[in-house]
Length: 439
Ligand code: SAH
Ligand code: SF4
Ligand code: F3S
Image (cartoon, rainbow, N blue to C red; front, top):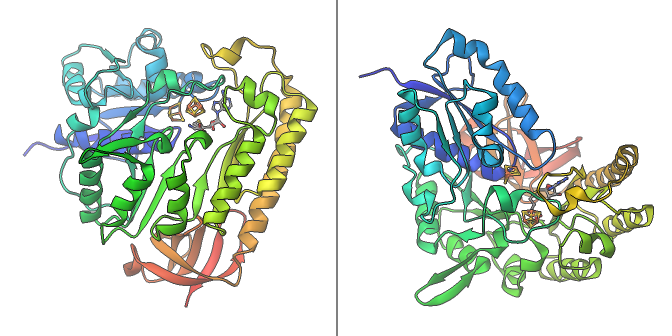
């Protein structure tokens, strides 16, 4: 047998990139590659990139620069760039870094094995097409390896919403839903490999729609179907758009036991003027009303969100509206960013808020969000919660798992309990995690 070749994949960006990296690793596994966690002895280096905020492309070029000596030492080392920077920059990447062998956009991953082969014969490869066929049908699965307890499963990809700040509709293309049968087959396969929690992924996951036996399905129905897989214990989904939260999905949070009480529902801003300028197509009041309905269905749900501060035209009063919305919602967790102009998006050419002002606002918002997060974590102390044990913890004899609310929980536990849901009493709250003990 020939020696397996080593593949080093470095993943940036969102969870979908994490999922795509797994699928690309599987696909290249069929071509004889095994994953390695260092570039030092790799036969192929693949960067799976993100373009969501500024300097992403520059970061990739400097990362590529680091690999120059590797290529010099091992001329048949292959270097590939995948993901959203690959989609946005295309052949430009090879022009600026001629040592790159292949550039592959997110909708062309099914071509990766043949591109890798052609690159091996010295031909530079660039594919940033948006083909008609479903790439997932063509991505080989590789051998049935055991998996960790929790896995991602992409059900929807791309976006038709065109928020004024966002590159995703350009890098991922139009909204596409995978079929019920494809998703169920993949879910069953994951469960057979030891997975007990599935996190359904999509850029707008709640825009997922499908059809089964002539009936139209929405995401809630898909979740109910997944819940019928006995050995599957937990279901999550991310990321949702407020305008696609339909009644059935809200109801599912109340009546599907396996659906975890955690919802990432970005609002970006609390100001109607800014929401309009962002093309989000809803108001702050509509969002708050939606939160109210979700909480009526599932009172203890943990909410999470994304925020952009310093969007073009944001005044102090607009920013205060965002702070006020956060006070009202009290997110369990939230992510906030300074607005970053993206070439080619509508907002990029508008008058920008000054950098110092953006930084000051971000600091204020993050302080508030961190306080709410801390308070939410502290409210867990003393409770007994089901925790899915996932991997060894930081300290000897420890395991770390996830609560239903997505908190990381550390505790003393037998490594054999990996993949089990244990009842744990929460002892205290740390900065970004909880400490517990099995009861
Ligand atoms: N589909 C998701 C968001 C995907 S991008 C949604 O509609 O909510 C993840 C987050 O990155 C966004 O929610 C937004 O907060 C942030 N983001 C996107 N573009 C950005 C930009 N140009 N500048 C700063 N933050 C941005
Ligand atoms: Fe980007 Fe808006 Fe689409 Fe989310 S909904 S991916 S923020 S364009
Ligand atoms: Fe980044 Fe592309 Fe995801 S831009 S956030 S990797 S969809």
